[in-house]
Length: 188
Image (cartoon, rainbow, N blue to C red; front, side, top):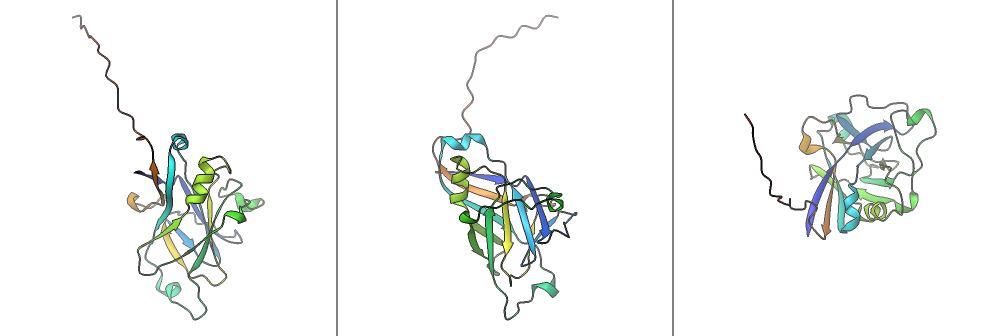
């Protein structure tokens, strides 16, 4: 078995009504009224390997003390969907991107952990098998979800950028280089 970590190519956080789009883009806010869009560029060579597992990994940032407090009716449940349309910072000026509700993944926020892991194996397999086109992911909160802040693809610590960790079987992605004999003559 081998693994590959794919770094996020683009990420945006916006309010669910699209009135507020985070322009600093260093953090991504997720809760009942904020959502996250992520895009990962999958290498085409993955179609020749058998994917065993794919996990989205998001690294948490320090929460604001005012919004981090738990309330009685707060929820730790969040949703992840594959997008059927591409997103951009201008998506809110038009119809929002369509999402695939049938491939929804429900995940929890473990408050004891400094990161969140979401199993997205089925979605990545469907991308690789061309069952759906990779147009990105949407993360949303339930009606009473608590605020969680994650590092974006623009965060200053690169090791905290969102990533997909894929475990696969098959040949190594990096093939060994072949050696070709050559002769070099230098005329002076």
